[in-house]
Image 1 (cartoon, one colour):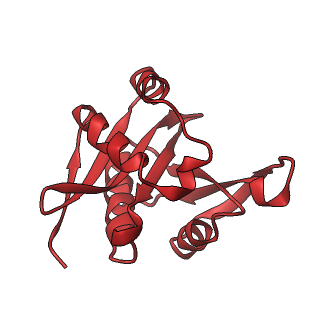
Image 2: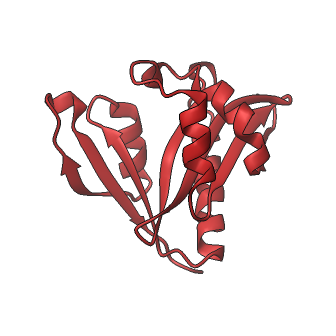
Image 3: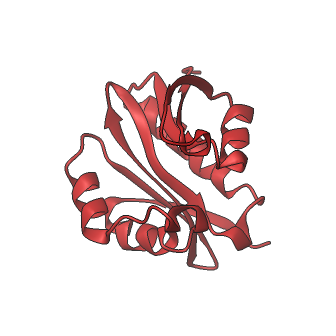
Length: 151
């Protein structure tokens, strides 16, 4: 596998959105470009990370400050590039970035139906702190948090 390069910047939104459109889990609840762009541009401490292999975007993470925590709003890796450590690198860089700005925790939401993401988060020290119940158990939103420790 080729070297993974993580780039940071709001100017990478188009690359992040291009990956977002190819993530199967997000196709059911697809959000329009304009809506995503406006939301990230109207937040405190927005962060966009894009993972590249051979200069092609293969993963992304978008987050911002929410309730004094750093909220990971959207993150995904193309199915063909999963299980190669890309999400781990995106999360690690997010943690480092958040700690530099003095955040003490990361929060993220996922759904019961996204078992792989839930297992990933739990295995990386995220704890379930709340559940936003929806019509079906599979669509319940699980809110997870990870405490950051400054080393």
